[in-house]
Amino acid sequence: MNQFFISAFYFVIVIGFMVLIHEFGHYAVAKLLGVRVEQFAIGFGKRLFGFRRGETDYRINALPFGGYVKMSGENPMDQHSDDPREFLNHPRWHRFLIAIAGPVMNILLAVVLLTAVYMVHYEHASYMDQPAVVGWVEHGSPAEKQGIKPGDRIVQIDGVKNPTWEQVEIKQLLSANQPLNFAIQRRDQKIEGSVVPVAVTSSGAGSAGWSPDEPVIIGDLEPSMPAAKAGLKPQDKIVSVDGQPVPSIQAMIESLQQTKNKPLQLEVQRAGNTLSLTVVPVLADTPGANEKHYRLGFRNSYQTTVTKLSLPEAFSHSLADNKRYSVILLQLVGKLVQHKASLKTVSGPIGIAQQTGAAAQEKGWTPLLGLCAAISLNLGIFNLLPIPIMDGGVILLLFIESLMGRDISVTIKERIYQAAFVFLILFAAMVIYNDIAKTIAQRLP
Image (cartoon, rainbow, N blue to C red; front, side, top):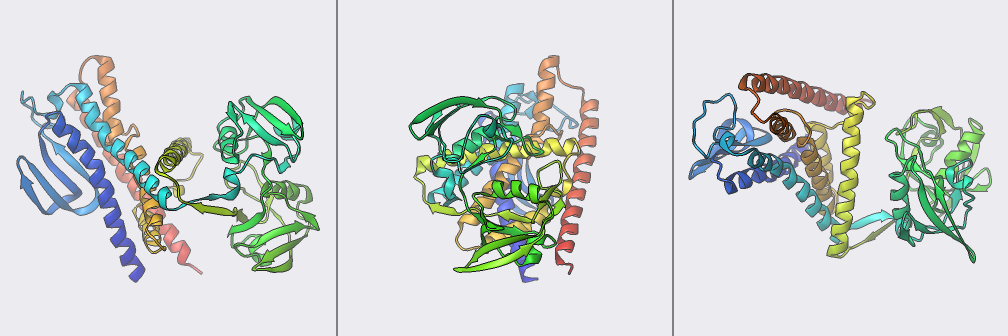
């Protein structure tokens, strides 16, 4: 019960702050453009308390899920006058700026928060900022077909000279089925060529089939899978399989597809001790992939480096990470629309509250700020989706009206808003139901 109150407390604080920033964006631009703002509200429903300053009622409402800025004449169903300070009497480009200001504020907040986190605690896989020396090449991969071998150093890729592994991975990730020019250094020989990464995940991420020489370290374990049953634990380091050294997690994955369900003898290092464990791979679904593979059932945990970045470096990394996360979010939305992803992947208020409570109890303030950045980015992207009532829906209708050269009729808008409202209520109900179901499942023996 104590955990519940901690999660609820931090959830209200975090969501309230995110909503405050979002609505302040709408409010500030509306005021700047001369639109009368009647209410600035955090939450919905009955007014609990607040104050009035000038023409605006600043208020806290009973239901702490969201918020709004009520502008004069904003609702198409309201009775309108010729008052130039009414929202609908302003030009469309004014209304566009007001609508987009909220999501923009959330996205900017995500960039600022992540920049602050990276200036204090920037944690990443150790190999990512190392020179791109190939440790292993997948059999039959595009890299192998181009003659690339372990020990080759990638000295140029798609115009980037002397790239780190992070730069190489980003390039191949975004270049599925597209030629990627490269140059490698092999002893005193420089070899140039072009490789076409293949899509290796359901989201279309590209891979050339090369990887760094990186030890296999156990991360998260799947309870019902062979690795957990064999006694492997997080932070165990797999040194060899059947006496053969393991240069990378990718090499181990390929080896499992060859040995299939044959029992394997693992040499494992744990807290300075060497153990020998026997494990039998199973054919199972693979997260992010379209087909089953032979698996042991663990997530690889890379050796990490923790540093502090300067302001320019932290800002640059924050921009890059927020851009990457935005693409992932949009891909997820696309998968949901195409019924290629489950709605269970979306967290609602209960799931967010649990994550917020857990982050708040971690050591230091950077975990909570990092989560706040992710929530803020999610809120900004979600509000830009072309759903009527949402900011993206308002922008979409403004675009349609600009093409038509006139406003959409009030009757049609009313029907659109009613349908959108029902959709959002049903969507919220399904997400909350999934949150409850996942919570119950986690507590079952």
